[in-house]
Length: 369
Ligand code: PLP
Picture 1 (cartoon, rainbow, N blue to C red):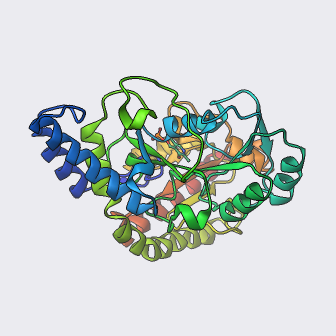
Picture 2: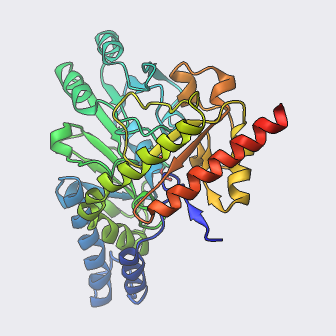
C-alpha cells in the first residue's frame, strides 16, 4: 500500500529543485567569508539564495538575515530591541511564546482569529518600546490572521510588528511592504527546502540586535559561518513560490472535498476554524470521542501520516493551546487531528485519507457501543 504524507505543516518533502541546489553546493569548497576564489564561489551561492528569498517576500537582499530556522528568526525578533511591552496573539507558535517570559497574550475569537479590539486596547496600555507579534496563519488550524490591520494599528501607536510567516510562505502571497511589518520570519523546511535554515527579514529602519555574536557574519546581525547547503536549498525552494501559490486552488478543492466526506460520515465532527479564512491545505478536524493519539496511530497503521495537537514539537501530545484559546473544551480538543496536504497530494490520496478516517471512526464507535 502506498504511504500517504499529509503532514506538510510539520515539514514539506524536499523539492527536486532544492535537492539539486544542495547537491551543487556540496561541490563548493570554502567559506563564504573568505576572499579567495573558493570563498567567492561560496559567497555567490549564499547571495543568490538571499536574493531569491528576498524576492519571495518583496524585500531587498540586504534585509534578509539567515538563521537556523523559524524558531531562531522568531527569537531574534522578540529580542531585536529592548522591548518593554511584547504583545502576542494567544495562538502563536511555542517558539514565540517561549522566547520571553513577559509576553502579554492577545485573545482570539471562536474561529481562532486574533481580536483586533483586544490588540488596540493592549496597545493603548503598552509601555514603549512595544513589539506586536502576530503569525500570518496558524500551524494547527490554518486560520489566517489580520496581520496588515494589526500592523496599521501598531504603526499608529509607534509600536513595531513581527510576523511569523513560517506557514504562509508559498501558501499566501507575502509582501513585506503590503503587510507593513517590521520583521518577518520564514523557514526552509515548510516550503520544500531543508530543515535547519530560515530567515528573519527586516523592514528598512527596523531595530536589530544579534542574539548570537561572532565573526560579523550577516552584517553583524547573526554570528557564525553561514549554512551554505541550507541556504542553497532554501533559496531554490523560495524561487518556486509562484508555482507553489498557483497550486493552492487545487489543494483547497482537495481539502474541501476531504472535509465534506468526513462530515458526510460524521455530521457532528467539527472542523476548527472553518468559519474563518484558512490556508488552503490545512484541516484541523475532530473525530468525536476518539483521542487524537489513537487516531494518529491508526492512520499510521493504514500508512497515512497526519498529526495530533501541536505537532511541530512532535512526540508528546498535549491538549492544543490553540484550540483552548479558541474556547474548544479540552475533551473535544483532545480528539482533533491536523491533516495538512501539499503539492504532492492527489485526489486518490485524499479519497484514501477520507476512507481511513471513516474506518477509524466506525471501528471506535462500534467498540464504544
Ligand atoms: N512558526 C511556526 C508557525 C511553525 O509552524 C514552525 C514549525 O516548526 C516554526 C515557527 C518553527 O520553525 P523551525 O522548525 O524552522 O524552527
